[in-house]
Length: 232
Image (cartoon, rainbow, N blue to C red; front, side, top):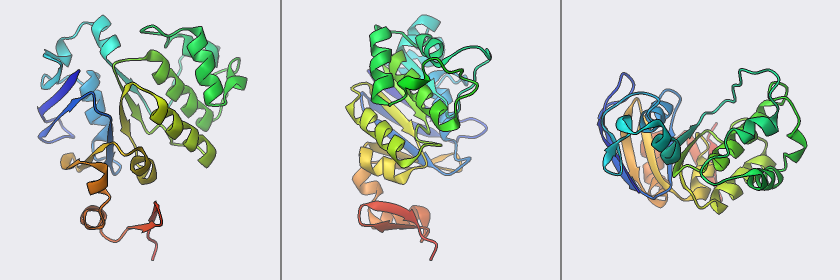
């Protein structure tokens, strides 16, 4: 399937255009760059007539078709029923052929089986992040957008998310501030700055020394195979 973003302009974005065809991608950029706004436009949470999924405008897709086509997983878990537990929350995400056995497998893979009967209101921020991530996998949309999937996670859990993303065969868009995650995933990269698309290309070219200096100045340094803030 093909996604086309054709000169999208909003109050936060300016003239954003690109195409994807079953290609995993990372969206990078600083706070306020427009990453989340772009993802919401793509899935139709913010209306725009310049986004096409296949030959159809996303804004014209029926609710049932959109549910199968695209899914946005936010960076923060919010539930409005204080009594709902993790298992009940995840059961709401069993779409497009997934079932209870898939849920059990994902809980085990992410090592959060012990949370099944915990209230979503009482689990930690890191645990909430993993539950959200699991819900995106279970929804099993054709294209899933994960907004900051490793936020609030310790190193071990970040590795679990990375390994799961690499193993998952679905079409993915990952929004992240984590340069190391972007580098290890190796996906095509879009870099946004002040609402403009200033880089669209391969992971290898993005992490070239000259390109990093162009985008970040001297604030980022590479130590072996890791990228760190250069406190000088």
